[in-house]
Each structure stands twice: as structure tokens, then as C-alpha cells.
Length: 101
Image 1 (cartoon, one colour):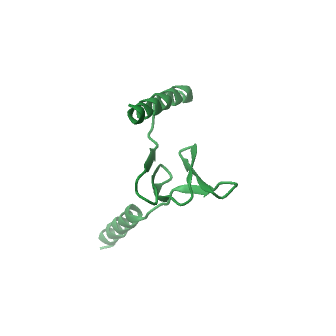
Image 2: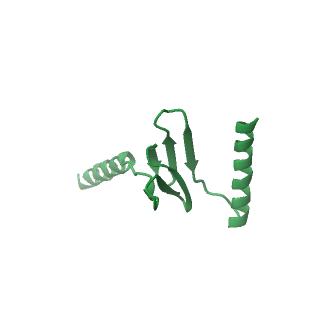
Image 3: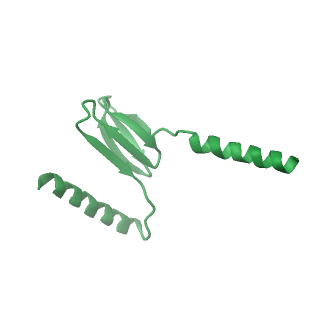
């Protein structure tokens, strides 16, 4: 009986933790016009009136008119920080090319 009760309590705890929502990590910018978001060590600014959803590992920002979207997600990458930053630079270049083409 105790074993079954312990399993039920553990299952309930897992369900509660899986449903718990974590907010994106952010703080106001010095001038208050924007917010500084942090995703796995990457800091970036977005206008203060954009709505944000996500967690400390990913953030989705939407402009008030819903005409702009910014998504930032952290994933594990093998190798050194320099390799990771190089890959990030390439990804940003590919994304920018889509907007200018």
C-alpha cells in the first residue's frame, strides 16, 4: 500500500512540475524603453511593449500589432564556445539573407 501511495505521489509531483510554467528571464533596460532578455547566457533587447512567452531556455516575442515575431532558443552544441559562436553567426547570416532576398 505504501509503495503504491509513494508512486502516486511521485507521479503527481512529475505532473505538477511538467505543467509548471517558467517565465522568460528579463529585466528592464537602463532607459526603460526595452527589456533585456537572457537565454542561456545570450542577452538581447526587445521593445518593452512586445509580449513574451517561454522559459530561461527559449523565448518567443510578438509585437503589439502581431506583425513581427522573434524566437530565440538555446540548444546544446558540441565543441568550444568559439565553434558555437561561429555556428550562431552563420545562422544569423542565413536568416538575414532570407529577409533581404
